[in-house]
Amino acid sequence: MFRSMQVATLLCVAIAMALSLAHALELPGKMRLGREAYLTVQPIYYPGFTFGGFIGEACGMLLLIALAAASYGTSAFGWVSAALILFLAGHGIYWMFTHPANGFWLKDADLSGLGAGFFSLFAPDPGSDWTKLRNIWEHSHVARAGCFMLSLILLAAGVTA
Image (cartoon, rainbow, N blue to C red; front, side, top):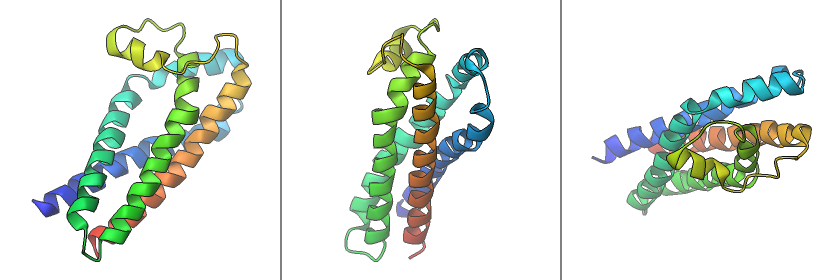
């Protein structure tokens, strides 16, 4: 059971890292796009990244908490706890910076149900400066990729400790 928890946690943290890294790697190309092209391209990430984000981040967070608790008193505890802290930092960056910008990109999308409620949380003014939101959104993913990559490295060290 414990080994299965370790593998599932590694998988979820790897998914979260992969999704944020994919966004970070797109930054140089997307920064060259003009307003119309950027606003056309940006909404294509939903719902795929939303589903992956839920699996990677929500499940990863819960599993990291459970694994840290299960590792208490072992040599893995420090590694897993540090991985959890970095993972929480990456998730916090999402809510402070990435998510508010998401509402702007999806303001004209036909969303219903949970999606409409989720993406309207903390949405900026529809008249906001798109370049400022673009820069926040793109750079927040670089920061998230760094947090999640370090979290994955620490977690891997912990499960092999």
